[in-house]
Length: 319
Length: 286
Image (cartoon, rainbow over all chains, first blue to last red; front, side):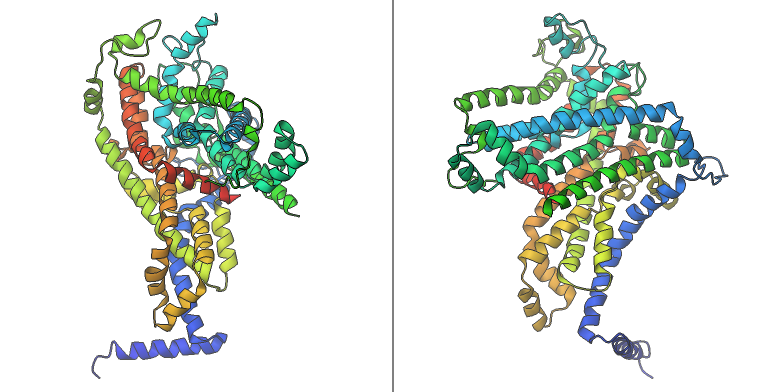
């Protein structure tokens, strides 16, 4: 009876493995591979479950409860949160503002990004330098850039109002009134994301095989016609991807709004209401987490709809 | 990123006189892109009274480098920087590890449930982080992870795109024969992963590492929720609270903003090509 703890266990393990193999009719090597697959994936899936999948699911669950962080009673209220949302002026304003923001930022940044990409795809010198410059704001974090822009937009000493004064424009309180702040944030955000769109569209342009251009130029196409007939159709999948990803990002705008329009006497007006800010405020300042979750569900549905549209169009193209 | 084959001119150059006009447009645009950086840097070197000059001047009259030490005295930006490094490097390493192992398994094996698991992992990426941060916050609270590095890094330690990228890379550019040869030599699956797969993924690891690092470094709303103690602030958060304290002192704010810009700026100058290529990779998602 020497070493009872080791030998019988190993023997049992072997027997067990054989029995399992017999039971589900696979050979031992396949079983070993399955074990490797599942054991390897367990930690990854565990992280996915705890940090992503379960929270996604619980957002939906919470949205049906009057879930207040401080109050001990968290009653089920059905669709009441959603009904309240429809009458919540802040939420409706946030929805409107965020949509407007998304439309303008995506429209302008994709159009400018495409123009830049077309210019840079041509045979031009210094394209690498231009690309680096336009891409720089993408890589630099948002908070310092928001501060730099806040200073540019400053109502009394800001350089922008100074430049505008050359053209006889009276000083504008860029960040003090929410409806003006919207435009300031849009300008800043276009500046920030332009380079990202440019880089993706440039890859798309360079992936268009040269033979298409050769063939079109033999047929006498040039300039605008070439762009409309060759470039645009062939660029469509990546263009669509850029539009959808920018729209999703725009719907999640928060940092620049938080830094530039909330909090201090430098921004005496009401904060610019956007969806994520409203979620943040309801959930983490007013602790109405059930209500904020209902808002989050609305945001989720918007984003999912956009993603599905993208899949649809790409699939239609493939057929 | 260079696919211009056979000397065919791209549409941008087909108009007459285009190079000069193009350069004009691109240069003007470049100035607009760079101006906020220049203005921020110039302001950071001015004494307080010169930020209130009207008309404003670009360059300081009296250069005041003391803004920088004074900012560093006013808030522990070095500590914030180190926190950012810990969170970003930790997230990056975990993204690389999880993407490698899952990418390998999804790329080279068949097993029951594979399709479903892969779809769940990819599908979860459709949900923006902001939509599920409330329950995640509650989870962190119950785990006691608020004001801890794991808590701040949590959402950034996995990346569905990373798993997708690694799967593509491993499935398409590492031949099955290589794995079979290793198996004949008696290597276990784990050994194959560590000795054969990982060394052959170095370029993909680099690209993914850059993306993961940038993602964690740029995080804002989650650290804002998770770090309530000043010692746990990452740079972005430290700067935003600094901003609420020195609202109108733009010479200080700009100096602090410059300090927060420098690490990424240096990284971009050194790794420009690789960073831009990595970001361009995300276009594959579609």
